[in-house]
Every structure is written in C-alpha cells, then in structure tokens.
Image (tube, rainbow, N blue to C red; front, side):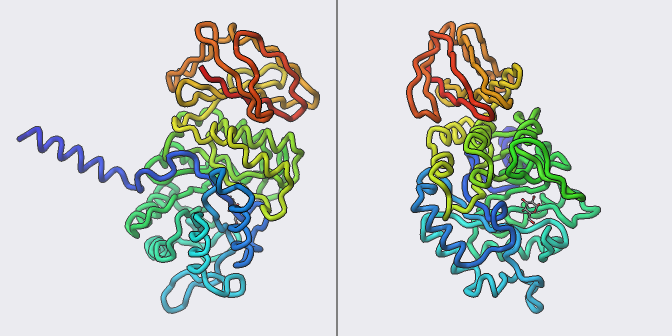
Length: 401
Ligand code: GLA
C-alpha cells in the first residue's frame, strides 16, 4: 500500500512539474517569420502569398511548417469593451481567424507574436496583466505558435513572466509552441526547459557575416559572433527545448557562400530554422540552400544533439554533431578571407562527445562520406580528406558507419 502511495505521489508531482504541453517541437521548429524582411509592414495578402509560396517553392515539403507573424499585427489599443487584442483592421480587414484558416488549409501552421511587457518592441499592446485573456484569445484563433518578446519589462522577473504565460497557454487548452524571445539576458536555458519549446540565446541577428551593427541604444549581431555566443549552451538543448540563435537571414544580402555557412551552422547547432526572407522573390541559390534536405536532416536529427566545435586551426574550424545510428555530421568552416586547405586524416582523429557519450573512431570503423552541398558521395574515411574550402564557405559532410 505504501508503495502505491509513493508512486502516486511521484506521478502527481511529475504531472504538476510538467507545466508545458508535452511532445511539441521534438525536433527544432521550422517555418517562416515576417520580421527580418517586413518588420511591421505586414498584411492579409502578404500572409496568403507567403503561405502559397511556402507550398509552391518546396519549403513546406522540406519541413517548413510554421508561418509566424511578428510584431505589427495588432491595433494600437485593445478592444475597449472586452480588453481583447485587436488585429489591425487596415492590415487585416478580414480579421485574423480567416487567415489562420487559410494557412491551415494549405497544410501549414500559424503563429503570432506578443511581448511579456506592457508594450511590444514596436509599441503595440503587450500582454503584461492579460496573460490568461490573451492565451484564450490565441486558442480561439486556433494558432499553433507564440513568439513572446521582452521589451518594456522594467522590473519584471523573466522566469516568472514567461512561466505565467506558459501556464496561461496550458490553461487555454490548445497546444501552442511557446517561443521565448528574451535575448538570453536572464539565461533562459537554465530555467525554461519546462516553460517553452525554444528560447533566444542572443540579441537580434543581422544579415552580416561578421561583426555588429550599432544602432546606438541597441546593436544587431552578425552570424559568426552569434555562433560564438552559443558556446557552453549545448547541454541545455534537446528534443522539445531548443537554444534559438535567432531567425535566418539567408537570402537577405550576404553572399551565397555566407548564406550557405549561416544555414549549415544553424543545422549543426540544432537551431530552429525560421526563414526570414521574402519567399516570393527568392533566387534559385537561396531556395536551394533553404530546401537542402540533407542539411535539414542534420538539423532535424531525432537525437536532437547540438553540435560543437571540435577544432580551430587558423580560422579553419571543424564542427561535429552526433546523429542517429552512430552517424556524424562534420562541417569544415572557413572564417578567413582566403581559401583554406583541409588536410584531415580521419584515422588520426578520435572524436568524442563526453556530454552525450558518443565517439567517432574512424580507425576502428570506416565511415562512408556524403558531401551535403555537392550532393555527392565522397569516398570513405580510409583516406585522408584533402580539399579547399573557399573563404567564408563550408564543407559539410555526413559520415555513415
Ligand atoms: C525584438 C525581437 C525581434 C523582433 C522585434 C519586433 O527585437 O528580438 O526578433 O521580434 O523585437 O519588434
């Protein structure tokens, strides 16, 4: 009898602890978000056109599921009678529910944005004090994803604020992926595993390869510094709870090699893949980067292990990521301004991941090599790899036992 009580207690306390919906985002979420290209210039026809092109361009088939409207979808004031949020009637003359239905009719999912503070970053009504009401509003719209930002939150405790919203979503009863956009200020990786499915680890990204763009009161971070800021965070990520180094800037102004590098690193980092370009006008190169199924398979690997930097020699870095069935992804990243030569003798390198107890020992077992961007087989690990990686480019490989 005592035993039964003991197990009942354990069961109940686990249930109480499991505050967020279980089983959402078991692999990093994939989709499109309006912010990086459109900021607040969003409207009904844009959403419909993006939904259409997500299907026709092969993005949906490649795994991009969520169409997320970022800041700027609301009116400046809540409804004076109900207190509900109001979609901007000029931008969304048919309301939001019809759009959600349209996006769902395409086999896609729909997401919205709000903020834990009193106002969003662009000055629209924030959720502070309206958490349960807003969660019920989102559930009534049947949305599937909520990005929740961190502007205008003076004096608020981040863990409490995000936990309140998470509980409100749970109470509203609709499974909604909860994306914490707190910029890493309060180390969400240490407390958000049961609060949401992903948390931003840094400030906002920009479409520059290296360095920062300074706006005075805030700065945007380039792709390489964002990669560097992920160090030490991999132990916090896994199925259902991801580090989010921000949305993609592929197709937004960097060179093709830099876009390929950006995308490859987000795959190696098991990062959410939220495209941020104008899908209606993307070039063939951009499309083929975003829809490379072999790269995406590395990102979406079921183990959900975030990759790590194995080596750094004169700006030629080697990143590795353990995959299902003892496969490994290996990405040679050339950060320098000149082409770099790889001379990598697989048999000399015993690669271990002590955190997730994985080992790649090419001396004991040969691996077959697949070149992910060339989409070709590239021999095996019996012979050293000798190749040139152009400046700011990568060579991404999948090794199979
Ligand atoms: C913050 C976020 C961005 C975007 C904008 C919207 O800067 O970090 O991703 O959502 O707000 O105003």
